[in-house]
Figure (spheres, helix red, strand yellow):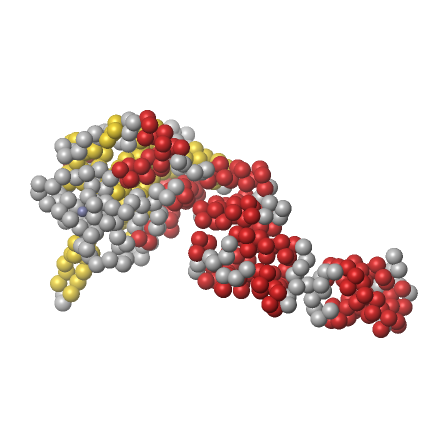
Length: 492
Ligand SMILES: [Zn+2]
C-alpha cells in the first residue's frame, strides 16, 4: 500500500474564500442618474443613458447614496473605512461592457481588514474580510437561437448599477462554514438595507476560491476559482464537487491545476472556463474622470450613528432578556420586519410573557403568512391587536383553538379581536359563580354518577366534565370547570 492510498479524506483541509458581489439598493445607478430597474419587470435597454452606454465624451458622477450604503456594510463587517479611496479602470473587452472598461477600485479600496463572526455546527468562527470595494455592474447578455442561427442580445439596464464586492480570506474550511458565512452576510446586508440580497434577480452573486492541503501542511494548496454561483445551493454543490475532485487528485498523487471554473447546474459538475487574465492584463489605472473618493470623519460618524442594532447584538439581547431558544431567535432575526413587529408587540403589551408572543408569532402568525405568501410587513393587523388576542387566550376569555380562528379572521379582514369575539359570541365563560352554578346543577341531575365518584370510581369525573361543558354550550373555560368540578365532587 502506498502512502497516498493510506491517506484518509479527513487528512486534507480545504481553504475556501468567497468574493461576493452585492447590488446596492440605490434608486439610481453608480455614475449616472438612470433608474435601477427590476430586471424581471422592465423592457431591455429602457433604463440607459450615454454615461452607462459608454458614449464618448461623457462624465461619470459618484452616487453618494451608494457610497453610504457601502460604508454601512463596511462598518457592520468591522472594516477600516479608508479616508481616501481611488476608482480605477479595469480594462477588458466584452460585449456587455460598452465602455471597454469597468470602473472599479483596485489598489485603494473603500474598506479593508474586517471580519464577520459566524455560527457553525462547530461553534463561533471568525472569517476575515480582506477588502470591500465599490464598482459598477456590467450589462447582461442573453444567448438565443432562432431559425438555426444563434446570436446574443445585449441589455444594458444592469450596466452601471452600483456593486459592492466583499472579499474574504480563505478562512472557511467546510461547506458548513461557507453556508454560515454567506447566509449571515446576506442577513446583515438586508438588515442594513444595503441590498435586497435577492439572488433570483442577481442582486447577490458569489465566486469561490478553493484549495486543499494535507492537514500537516500550513502552506495553501493550488487554488481554483469557481465563478457565477447564483444561489446558495449552486455554491454549496460546486464546493462539495471541487473538494471531492481535489482530494481525489491529491490522494492519487496528482497535482491540482490552477484554473477558473463554472458550475454546470444540470450536469452537477464544475466545468473549465476561459482562463482568467492576470491583474496585469486588465491594465488597471486610476480613473481620470473621477476625483479620489474622500470619506471624512464627520460623514463616517454620521453613518455610524445611524446604524441599527446589528443581528449579533440582537441575538445576545434576546437570549439574555427573554430567555428564548437559539432556534426561535434565529427565526426572529431572519427578517428585520419580524424583529420590528416582535419588538412592537413587546412594547404594546409589556405584561404579556415574551414566550407567548414568540410562540404566537412564530407558530400561528408565520403559518398564516407562509400559507398566503405574505410578508410580516404587509399584514393588516397592528401589534396592539395581535397582543390583545394573545391576552384574551392567556386570561381564559377564549380558548386557544378559538384564538387561532380569531387570528385568521383578523389577518384576513384587518379587524381587531374584540369585535370578532363579541360578534360571534366566542367569549368563554370564566366567571367562577356561573361555572359553580353549572357544576352544581349537573351534579344534582346525575346523583348516581356523583355517588359512584365519591365511592371511588374517579374516572366518572371525565364524563361529568363533558356534561358541564355541554351545558355551557362548549364555551366554558375548561380549566375553571375542571377545578370547580373536582372541588364540588370532593366536597372541598
Ligand atoms: Zn445611465
